[in-house]
Length: 487
Image (spheres, rainbow, N blue to C red):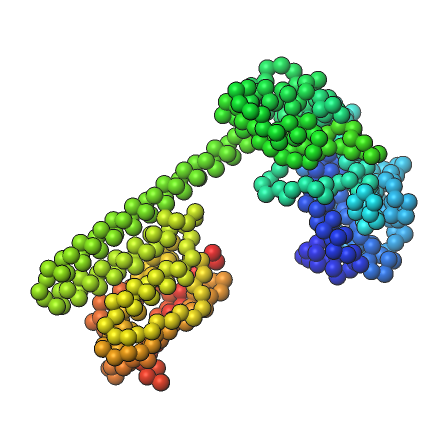
């Protein structure tokens, strides 16, 4: 299905400011749909001005829908739906007298012109369709919703909603069903939904909320012994379109204010309320677990470095050169694992930027090389899960050590690590220009412990592919292909 941006750029003549306004509107118009108990369709004229294109659609979560199928991308000629044409031409909200029964259920149609800013042009029309099949005598809650929807629709027509100055919302805002308060111009509560009242009861309110000054009431509940949060007073009074959170007695409540500005003056505000106590508790648990995991990685790294130091000390005490070399190889293997845990101890997630690890393994190999060997990495490993990073670090350590130790002995040379990465696979090659493999080399039957470790890790643990071959220009080339998930 084409995106909103695709439809607007392909079919309409809207400029970038108009596109940005529509994106802001569509990101927040669930509020209007829920308050209206109605479906919303946003129509924008095409480039010729003879047709309307549906670029966005929203269904209510508070009532039955009219449109069970998606209409986004639909194009209709002007004149087919007169209310859209009238709203566009006369710059006013249009309401049809009698319900439309053409779909088999009674539907009340209304159209709302969308103005870009208080002094801007009309850039589209919202068709608001209400399913009347379950119509009954409205409750106080429903009447408050409908009045609020009417005010919000008028703000859309006047170019006052969405709020151009509102900061981007990074987490899910409260929805209408989470809890709603209606305030008058002075910031006093004129209506409180049952969910909103329950949230304030959990904050410790015992009195009635209706008639109370919301800012003062909330401050008294949550800031009795400390300075009042200034954002709270702005949000709770409904003076600015902002969000804040308040906490008392272990309960955390999120507040979002929507000032109602109709006819040039502020007539009151809506305050959406959501109890986020459980959500914040889980977030704190995750932060605690994250800190614990990082501390574990830090301690594992320290323990591995201790093991490496003990092996190094033991190697110095041996008179057997083969034994010394075996212990030194073990030191390098332990060191490559320690590097991964050191990086993980600094990362907020179990994902690591492997390029840093690869460069440190390269530096570690170059330091202990007996010959003058230049090791160069070309390409990026990207971000890898810890479960993949640890074995790959060991594999890289073994391959570089083999190249330096067996490919060059005491001569100089070059080693290249060529890396390519896509969404599903990591492929890299370690190539050297050393003396190359013996003529009778067989990977399956090799006695090299390093290559056996590489084969076990790549094929057995990572379900990858491993290839070892002689280079035509001289030297050895080891190629690996490993399935990975995108980081």
